[in-house]
Amino acid sequence: MMNPSYNAPAEVGRLGQRALIVGVVGLALCVAGYFVDKDQFFRSYLVAFVFWMGIALGCLALMMVQYLSSGAWGIVTRRIFEAASKTIVPLGVILFLPVVFGMHSLYHWADAEAVAADPILQHKQPYLNVPFFIARTLIYFLVWWLLTTFLSRWSQRQDESGDLMWKQRMANLSGPGVLIYGLTMTFAAFDWVMSLDPHWYSTIFGLLLIAGQGISAMAFAIIVSVILSRREPMSHVLRSSHFHDLGKLLLAMVMLWAYFSYSQLVIIWSGNLPEEIPWYLRRFTTGYKWVGIALLALQFALPFCLLLSRDLKRNARRLFWIALLVIVTRIIDLVWLIGPQVGSTHQAGAAGAWMYIVAPIGLGGIWLWFFSRSLQSRPLLPIKDPDLASALAATQH
Image (cartoon, rainbow, N blue to C red; front, side):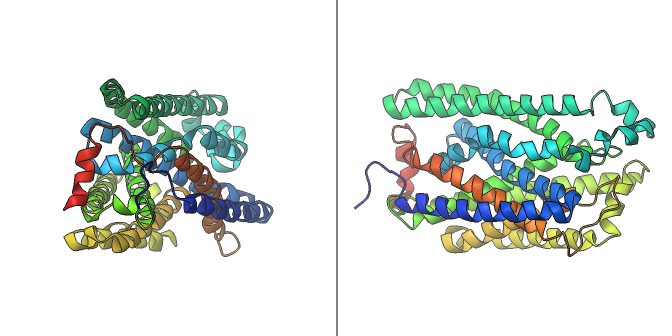
């Protein structure tokens, strides 16, 4: 019989505990990797941090989009988005601390000697300096925390009272909230990733990372939804029509990411400017070219062709594997963006490249444990949302 309270099944807690164990082991291996290759450790850690925070921030953005659109796809996945966005603070702040400690290994502009010998870095020093970098990041986290806190609090009050006022408040905040997210995430993308190469710039880079977060968040929501659909109470809720909607949104995200990536490449390559083209040359003339080919095949071509199928999008099991493929390739994409950086002749070899695998697993275990606890704290459906009935009507067909 269906659980009328829509409480999360006990398996969610058990899976979270297993993830925590895996995460602790992964982080222990990362610590060991620090003594093997310090630079590679921090580079791998940054990949993991940007990836998992990308899922959390992407879920925050999709949650606000759902409040604006009132789509059925977002009603049945809202709790996933809420639980993921709650990991931004305080967990995200804690996970950011190793990035602060490793700034001199990661960022060329954080080295005073490098700045003294480089006129371009001296010109950018008023913006690219350690205190201002940390202050900007704290502002980003504060803004994201405020958005998450208000939306979560109002959602809980809607569950308690069913008053339409709370739905309207969430929609009113989500409009400017999406714009604020876009602005802060653009600057965060410039700070955390693009400034790894302080001589290079791209005006579309923030949108590129935002599109990647959309892919990560939608794929993650699909994976969690499929797992929940195998157990009560969501086995009576999630149906093929819901997965069809989620699959279409994932296809749209994949196409958007491909469009931004191709646009950036074509504009920079055709311009062939000395301050822009070396960024691509480091990726096309080294072993990273194979990573780029893998991205083209696995993050665009294959998912695009498969997600064109209506039957596949309505099949939860098959959609699960496509979403998992996309999640893995998002990590590969971040390795391609973060790995080959200026200011260092270091290239990951067999002695250090394994950290690109271990670091996302280690941070992911901790993040998933925190996520599972948040998911268990609320009913899996917004039980007094006025649009819930229409969202569940798909289960009658």
